[in-house]
Length: 319
Ligand code: XIL
Image (cartoon, rainbow, N blue to C red):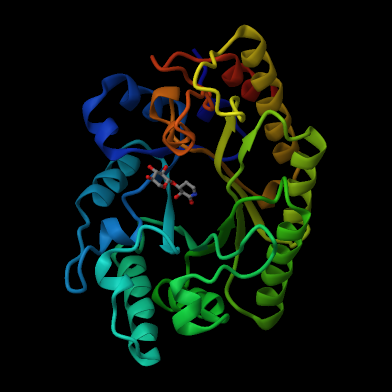
C-alpha cells in the first residue's frame, strides 16, 4: 500500500531508537517504508556521543546514518546544546569561562565535522527557554552568559557552512509568552547575521490543544521567514495521567482529527519553508510519553504492533 513518504510533499520522518531498529523487524520495516527523514531519539545527544572529555562514541549514530543512506532518507541532527543528557564530566567541569567556551565549541565542531556530508541539518540549541519566556538558567547560560546561543550557531556554521541550523523548543502551541520570547530571539539572531536557518516546534502536544492554537504556532513560526520543522510530534491522549485509562474508539477518532489538523496547518505553509514533520518515535509501545507521565498513553500514528491507527489516516487525509 501507499506510504507516507510516497504521499508527502515534504520530508516526513520519525525519531528512531537504534536498538529497536536493530532488533525489531516490524519497527525496521515501518521506518524504512514510511519515512524519508530520521532523527536519533537519543544517539546524537551530548551524553551519548561524548561520554568523557577525550572519548566520542559514534557507533549508534553512525549506524543510523548508514541506515538512512541505504534508504534514501535524510538525517536530522538532534541536538548539539541542551541542558539535559549531559555527562558527569561536563556538569562537574572546572569553572573557568575560557575552558567552558572551549568545551562548547569543541563538542559542537567535533560532532558537526564528524557528520559533515551526512547530516545536513542540526538542532543547534534545544529548549533554551522556560515556559514563562525567561531564558532557562541552564549550565550553558550560567557558565557562558545569555549569548551562548548565538555563539553555538556560529561554531556550528564554522564547522559546516552548508548545514541548516535550527533552534528547537516546545510550548509554541500553549504559551503565547514563551512563543513570543522564542520568536523574538530567533528574529534578533537573524537581524544580527547569526547563521540560523530553521525553527523547530517540538509539538509534544495533546488532544486538548485547540486546532487554532496549533495553527497559530505554525504560522507565527513561519513569519520569521525561516524553515519550519514539526520536530517531535506526538499527541498525548491521557493528559490527566489516569493509570486506568484505555484507548477507546472515541479517543482514536479525536486523535485522528488532531493529527489531520496539525498536518493541514503545516502543509499550508509556503513549500520552501516546509522543512518537514518528524514524529517522536514510531509506535505506541515505544513512546517516551509513557515514561514521562508514568501512565498509559497512545500518542503515535502506529499502535503497539506497528499497525496504522486512525491517527495515521488523519495524516494521510491532510497530505
Ligand atoms: C527524550 C527521549 O525520547 C527519551 O528516550 C529520553 O529518555 C529523554 O529524551 N524534548 C527533546 C527530546 O528535545 O530530545 C526528548 O527526548 C523529549 C523532549
